[in-house]
Amino acid sequence: MPLRIPIALAILLGLVVAVPAAATITIIQKGLTLDRASVSLTRGDRLAFTNDDDVIHNIHVFGPGNDDEVDLGLQKPGKMLSYRFDTAGTYRIRCNIHPSVKMSVTVK
Amino acid sequence: MPPLALLVLAAIAGPASALPSFAVQTGQPCAACHIGAFGPQLTPYGRDFKLHGYTANDGKDHGLPIAFTVQSSFTHTQQPQTGGAAPGFKPNDNFAIDQLSIYYAGKIAPNLGGFVELNYDGVAQQAALNNVDVRYVREGELLGQSVLWGIALNNNPTVQDPWNSTPAWGFPYNQSPLAPTPMASTLVDGGLGQRVVGVGVYSLWNDLLYLESDVYKGLNAPALTALGQVPDDGSQTTDFVPYARVALMKDWNNSGHHLEVGAYGLSANVIPGGNQTLGFNVRKTDVALDATYQFITDPAKVTSDRLSAHATYIHETARTADDALALTGALPDHRLDTLRADLSYSFAATVTPSVQYFRTTGTADANYWSTLNGSPNSDGMILEVAYVPWGKPDSPFPNINVRLAAQYVSYFSFDGSYADAGRNNHFYFSLWTAVKF
Image (cartoon, rainbow over the protein chains, first blue to last red):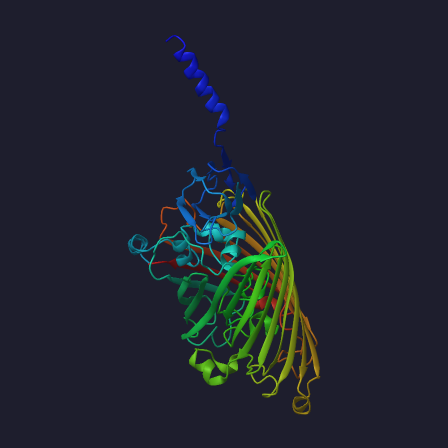
């Protein structure tokens, strides 16, 4: 009985070591640009987009298939939008309002 | 307009900018697209919106993109104009409704958008089809870099241009219809506006290289009349008119610097208006250079201060038909060179002082130019201060925008004369209102 707790802790720690935690990368949106033109992710990783401008933005995710797309909606100044990439492939991200606010994402 | 009526108008209208339906469609304040929070001087985003075919949007349904603008003014010239500034107007100190305009302006379908402007000219008391710019746009890749390309339909060479250094949208953005203006101007400098219809293709590669090629077809006199133009008031042609444009641009978004240098030109066989060549043709070829520089002090704030500078130089050669030479006594070849350069600084997208130097010089010929000494030369300066209270993110009236401007035009020479140039100097006070219902 007294060994149960150490064993449970060991298993838990082992799992933590065995399964890498999903990452969240913050993309800063400021001055009608994103601070990165491209990024590489692992499945399950997440991108979080800031809006540091004083106008409304939008985040629209295209991919990985030709017909796949997710519109995260409008983003008021100061609001954060995020998206988790669960499928491997190549994505494009852009603001529907500001066509030059865009980046590419590769998920492995 | 009484204050109460203005408030009612603001309450029932939709968000507004110089073309308020664009603001409604994108959910952006006027200042996002326009230096000084009122058109037509474009910010980098305004150019981007235009190049993408006016289709960028916030995903909401805003109904038909219809907008209205009204321009009213008061003009004082240094010397009264004998016989009146225009039919129905006094020799001096005239109030006028310069223009009433209605626009269809915005996205038409995916990848397709544009604007169509109908005007009522309150001075000439004439309704007409004004500028049209409709374009279909796609994006892709070329040589590993992004490429934007489009097909554009328009009726005024340079109206499709995204920079304010070319004639159609150049400074001054409005000017008195009741003040004297110099007689000579090049063909690409508005001489074919609303008198042709054309289609072209354009591309922007790697946000660096802009290329455009158009072919226009001149409208005949019945078509011009049907569209509200007076055929003899300007150059006429029924030929095809090629137009080309090239520009290099660079946006340093993080530091707020934006630069463009380019060239544009056209060639046309026209019959000049006003019976200048007794109805004979003149082959005019215009080659021009232009440049734009903008500095945005804080790219993250649409209300940040903005410095803008534009310049263009147009060189025109004109060869008169041999048949006309004996009858008119004119020289066979004429040159006309126009230089314009302007500088403005917009404080908080609210107060924008501007200054411009302009000069036109050319071949003197008393049998060609109907000036007193046969010279087409004019030069001078324009000083302007514009005030735009709204069109910003925190504006109390998101439904309406206005632009108040005081402009002073000073001529150093006018139609070849230095001695009498100053009599054409004038003040122009204007109120420009834009509304989206």
